[in-house]
Length: 208
Image (cartoon, rainbow, N blue to C red; front, side, top):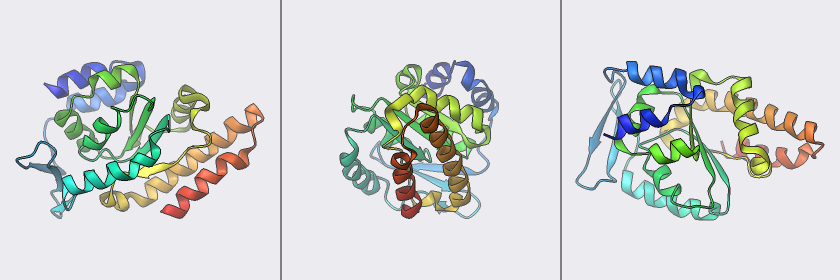
């Protein structure tokens, strides 16, 4: 099944913690999901307050795909939130896109997306990188940015998966601050002008 394939693809040392946590997850306490007749119609519901992640999963997917047409030449995209994962599966069909980096705070949402969709090929190739928010620290993020290399300096922008993640605003701002610091350091080390990188970041904060 999808989950086992994906788990197998999370074989690298960097994924040890995440893989173990996913293997140990035996029941969903925080979230549940509904699946419509259409395969793309997957919604996620927070059990505590019955809040739906999407008002209309298919319409929102179409809207997002339209929006990301402007980003087809970008080699790297950063997202906060895994959602139901469908958007990323479709975006990864674009071969110009070298990597998608996803930050997700809720382990159960990573678990669900890895059950819904087979990402094993993109995970193995490192085109999809999943970061559980609890595991994020400066050395880990520094490694991620080194891996991406120069691809991101002028195009760093942290996209929020959807309105559901507004709830995580503080975490998002903290994470962004960390990423900004790393970009600044890398730029200074390479003698690049940090102002270039900062433009994208100011844009992001403004969008929030």
